[in-house]
Length: 336
Image 1 (cartoon, rainbow, N blue to C red):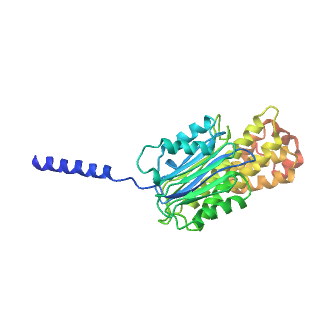
Image 2: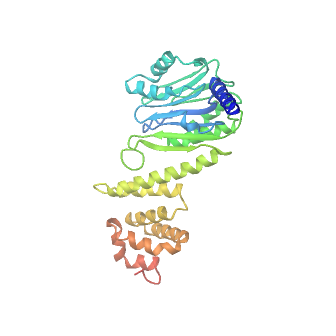
Image 3: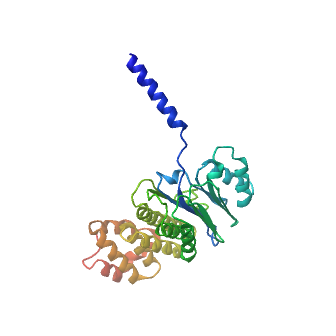
């Protein structure tokens, strides 16, 4: 009995000692940014830290984006968004959250904010784990701590500004450039990306256009790229479907979105079939035949059934009466 009591006492002391220790800093490099053309807001982050996406990135459509890290006060994320919703600028919100912070270690924090009007603000405390610092551009802020040096945020900014395309692609390019420049001095483990757009996410009333996390991986950038391709493919498929369901049907938008989806998921049977039908509906018969051939090569056993199920859908139904086209698609006759 005495041995049990002694063991219990040692466990309690060990737990107390662990609680008394300071939590490790969220050493990381990140970028917050806005797409000035369409208002997308986003954060991308990578670190030698487990599940960095559960701590650093915060964003709200038409409001702002925040990265909070280093000797992190996670509450900065929601507090900053609340202040931005109240009408404060990024600079005013930053000043307020720092003034209100009563927790230990404020001089070791790092935080960056961009608001929906394009204002950018950042803070790197003098005691943030070295090397620590930040760099800003017109629409972005890149920052990090426990980095190999200032070349990391500088490379991120250059990559962001030189990359074409939507915000998610620019954020990914910045993150990859930061890693190539040396990144987190301790190595790699996790990465995350959050991009918000008002009702831009999949399904109904969803503002999370992109939200992907790699929590524990020796090469989180490769996995983040794979997930981003999937996320964007699904997004464009969703946009294509919604354009077809719109009144009136927006066939041009549906086809353009399907082309984007196929670009991100070139080996997806369903994506290829959708684009093939939409190409036909747009009057591009040879492009339709090419896409049907790609789909058939991916899943020959499923092709006939899938074609029969889709061809009766409104915009695609005229294909049934197009004997010349059907003969090219099915030289031995259409499936019965």
